[in-house]
Length: 226
Image 1: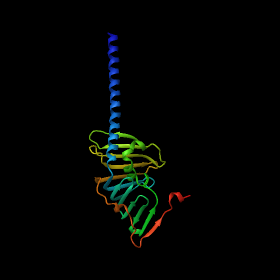
Image 2: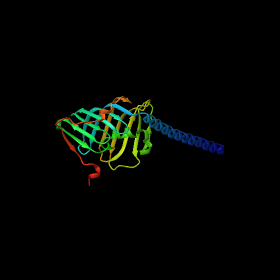
Image 3: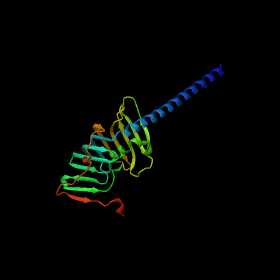
Image 4: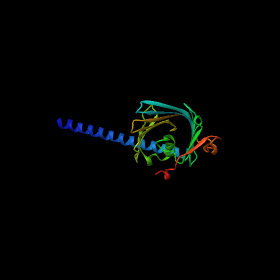
C-alpha cells in the first residue's frame, strides 16, 4: 500500500513538472511569435503621423515637464515635430541636419547629427521596430485585458539608458506609449493619439528653410569636436 502511494505521488509530481514545462515552452513560443509579428508589421510601415504628449521627469529636481504637439515620421529617420505647448517649437531632420527652431528666441539651431535614443527616443525606436531583436533583449507582457507591452533592454548598453517600455494595441500592434528610463532616475514618457500609419506625407515637410531675419546657430559636426 505504501509503495502504491509513493508511486502515485511520483507520477503526480512528474505530470505537474511536465505540464509546467510545457507551459513554459508555450509561453516562450508565444513571445517569439508576438515579437516576430511586430517586426513583420513594421517592415510594412514606411511612415507615421500622430499627436503626442511628452512628459520628462527630472529626478534631481523631482519635477515634471510636459510638452504637447504632433509629429510626422518617414523611414529611415526623416521627421518633423511641431511643439505647441508650453511654447512653440519645430524640430526637423532632413536626413543631414537636425533643425530646432524656437520662434520666441528668433533663433534656429542647425545640428549635423542624426536623431538618437537619448534625445529622440520615439524616432529612434520607430526606425528599429522592424529589427527589435537585433538591438534589444525583448520581454513580452501579454496579460489578458491589458495592452500588450514590451520591455526592451539594449544589447549594447548605453551608460545613460536603463530600459524602454513600449505599450501597443494588442490587435494591430500600434504604438500607444513609450517610456525610456535612465540610470540617473530620470525618465521620458511619450503618449500617442490619432496615429496614422503610412499617410501621404509631402517630401517638403521634411525640409526646413529658416524664416527671414532668424538667427541660424550652426553647431560643430561630431567629426570636428575634439
